[in-house]
Length: 274
Image (cartoon, rainbow, N blue to C red; front, side):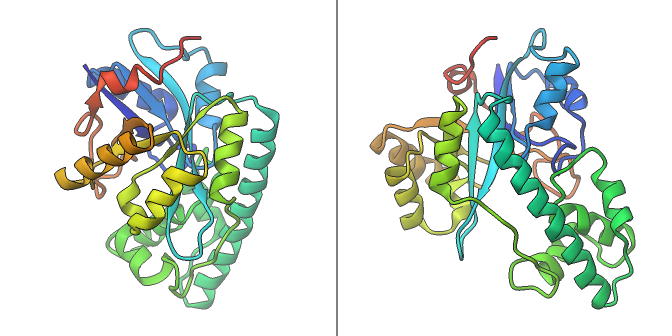
């Protein structure tokens, strides 16, 4: 049976609610899944508090995906089996959420100054249940209002780092994130290492800050990448993970859940029954 350890819900920048994502995972026959929303555990909390976690026939691993600070490269760190009620984790997520809101209002103001007529309320309507307001929510409004044909183009023209509407936001240091995940009882994993775009930095992160796992299997990793990261995981005794990074957009691969999966043998090493 297949598994998927990297998925997003509408509580960050995915399109499906946690309940819808669980139902879709069951439909495609996943045996293990992890919800790893950006900078929030609200989706997992909702499943738990509404009685949907654990889910019969599907083993759910609580997770999160943090964005780490770096002046040049994008570093994302996954945390698996975190205590979703850990006080220090909750405090840090509140701090990050507040920063995201400040950034969101600043980006809308910049876009208005550039002549793009959109309102904060329109972005919030797209974000729906998400408190982790992101650039993708803004991009979706720009597409909806026909300013751009795709989210990707909106990013390329306006929202990427260095573009006219980009605004930085607070991101903890990678070592701080790793420490926080461990304090919350979780396993810190370096996400999609190829997207870091610097193999020396990837090796440093795997070696020197306490990372305990590596996302070897990922849609944008080709066979050579997988071999390289398998060797890196073996070299530093890291747990091997993988996932689709599913968001539910028709413009983003994979467009459907179950298209990219990993073998259960990797997921079952992470699973902790309640």
